[in-house]
Length: 457
Image 1 (tube, one colour):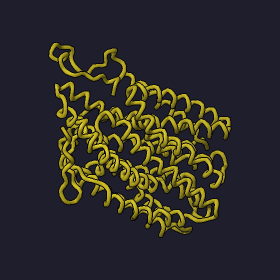
Image 2 (cartoon, rainbow, N blue to C red):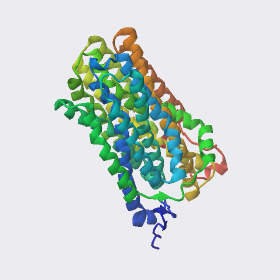
Image 3 (cartoon, rainbow, N blue to C red):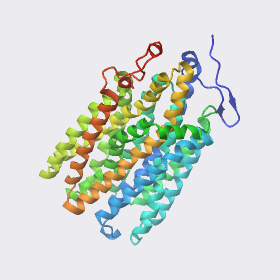
Image 4 (cartoon, rainbow, N blue to C red):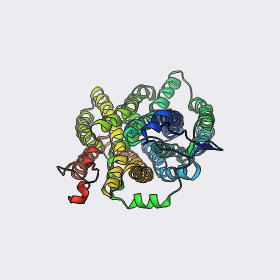
């Protein structure tokens, strides 16, 4: 039987969407989902670039701007904080306005912080003004949450690890891209306004393309009950904690790496810019691989061993920092970026799997179970993404305090090492400790139901 095509009403709304139906997916769903994924990645990519732009702008801001290293770490910390907080409302905006409609709005909103920064970026501007304008750039961090929630609804469970990894990785890569653009501008003796002038028209292009080629899903309705249920579920907060360790590390290090190189190792802005983009670039590119590995071997297993690697890399960074070995420091920092990106993909794959497992535990099957999983995983993603991004705030504040207290980042790395150890313990204890790892009670009734191990999520 031929699968029915998605029916639309005005404003590019799709009323019928069933990606778990393989016939529907193969004949009509996959093409539509991939088209929306592509343009979602484009908008989210530019959003990440705008969110990260102050990590680059501070490299342009020499002594004539009158900012101390502590001022710059505080500025990037506050930008990260706003990006974390706005992820919660951005998540639910998809259900209120539609994925396509909100992508248009959220992309267009990026013109506000970019234009404001263009106006104030000059010596003599007060730190409070820079801080206020920097806070506006935080809205770029919200695009991730709305994009992930939207794409989560388009893809079937068996494809979510790959799709969410690609969506997030394409967004994450906005960080190294703006750093590369800044490198070219600094190398050509250009100023920060050149960088901002490049991104203003790109924002307009992203908004227009979203309007032309994306769709809204009518099945994604505003559901405040889902938000409340997700907030009450312990797994939402456990995964938030784990996501602090992966994405919090990625965005925190992305914002701080250049400042560590200039303050601890005496690199010039141009020398720092030559190095800062490498880690975020590789970390972004590897994120879909983390999702793919999680699809194949289980997100919990990949996440567990990924934290082992992150802890080992951080231990080496402590040694490199104490010995002031720049080659070792940069090499291992890049490895840490790669591991954070891999863990980003594996942890986000765990989210829909966990709620699908809970649906099976309730005795739900088929589309009913899939709908339950989509409902709660979509709602939880905004909360998890917001809390995870707060890890970036913690990293920048830890570096700030470490430099104030010790004149280097060594103290901060010791704290990060302890945190990765805690993440390892939580992952093992919650998702891998029980040999059977089953969600269901050991009863005759439950044995007749489909089962999914937490170790498989």
